[in-house]
Length: 344
Image 1: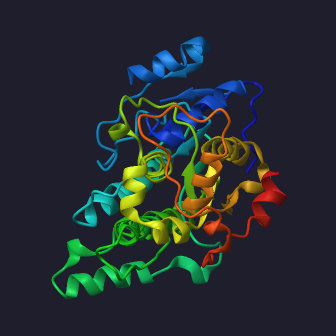
Image 2: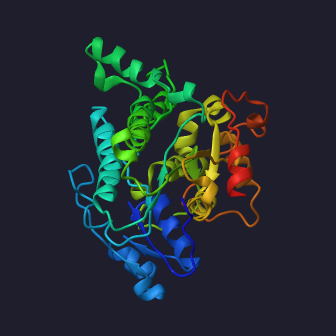
Image 3: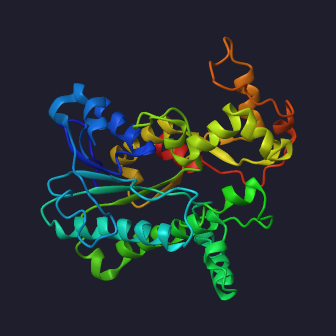
């Protein structure tokens, strides 16, 4: 399908625009003269763009037809709305809104016969091969459910089961396990999106492309509404806890700081990748791993301690064991060759 171009101005729906990543996606699109559809904070933040920015309130993304009105008249969609937090008890708290929100958005676009949309979706996965649908996540949930302990499954397993990535932690008392409980909610919505667009029944009606961005953990400045550290989004809160709060970092321990971490991307680079995926014709029908490289908490701690002048914080910076992150083993390294080649 033809790519969406900023000239003449096009209208882009960004779901979840009050969130961490989506707010940056909105700003990136607006700076590129692309018009965007999707709280009061955002209106103030983007007031300088005038009528190029609109807000559409969707109370419950899991409801059938939730996006029916929002998609009307748009040229492209950046669907980033999906729960991402460490507080889920029942896996369905993450899986149902992730799946229903994704499929619901696609259904709404398909209903709007008059528009030609190229839809972009933000997910976390391990790689782009068919072998990496990571059914292990669902197997982990099933194991816990069979043992009558469904709500005790790792949060990372819960989150990844809703998108498409997986990791299992065995030490349930460690901070690594608690962080690990998040990434299971992923496999379901990711697989459901591709199943939807590849359905023979839908293929005959679809006039748009699905392009998928697969970032690892996302760090960087927040421009969405944040009033206190407790209102930070999940990844930023983790960064604050282990890089800026010595008490919490010391509680986690030097081993945790030196050995916890995989790959990351700056939220501003991820936002730019969203825009490029819309504007690059070859991105249609593809999924891309977008990553800046490897990290351990100790790496960020060392960088923070090297800042001159030092940051003004209410607590002292953590120290950990300087340089320990450089010698730590990395179990996952993402290959970004495809994204580099197509998106630049």
